[in-house]
Image (cartoon, rainbow, N blue to C red; front, top):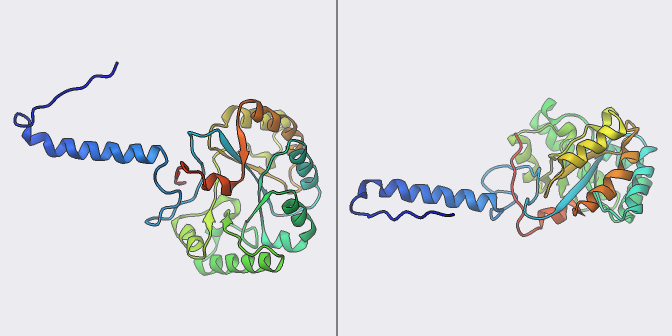
Amino acid sequence: MSHFYVVRFNKFKRWSLVIVLAFFTAGFLWFENNGILSVFSKESPVALSKGSSEEPNIALTFNISWGEEKVHEILKQLEKQQVQATFFVSGEWAEKHPDILNTISENKHEVGMLGYRYKSYLDQEVDQVKKDLRYAKEIFGKLGYKDMELVRAPHGHFNDEIIKVAEDLGHKVIHWNINPNDWQNPGTQKIVDHVMSQTNNGDIILLHASDSVKQTAESLKTILPGLKNKGYKFVTVSEMINQAHAETKIVE
């Protein structure tokens, strides 16, 4: 049962300012938690790691930085289950494998950038990061991908300064909040169990499609139908951003 308390202003006049401030703070938190605030703030650099917790939408994402063998079986599983994913690929990989990149795109998956070289941005000077992002954009443009808006930092390493650099170049930095570390090949069942037990509304799942992964394609045979059976809908990262109630979650 909800309880309401009536306060007589004259008696508690000295607390009026405190009460007003409390309501203001509560209102701000309500707006933030219900996703009314913008996904990408203009006031401070933000990386998106989660969408709206009010909608049963989830984004499945894959990173690719090397190799050409494992991605095909992963694409086959996605096609079989009619799931659209977002692939973040390095410019260096795209340059070497334009045919595979075209296959990803033709299968209606979204493409984002992992920069050009897959090297931690925290190990580079800011000017090097700018150069890497600009060159990656140039390479993707030559391959026919002109408006590359989505960027994921190599290894997921970034800070406020790197996010600001990316935003100034017209990019949106995308992180994740579900990571079964499939690149370590911990076992198919462990990958499945982690994703199935941890995934909730609005989550962004990180998997890999480089040749280091030995169990990811097999795990998708259970994960994709399993998450569908739980009522989740797979969307691309851009679709998640464009949701009316998308939330901002800042990554530290």
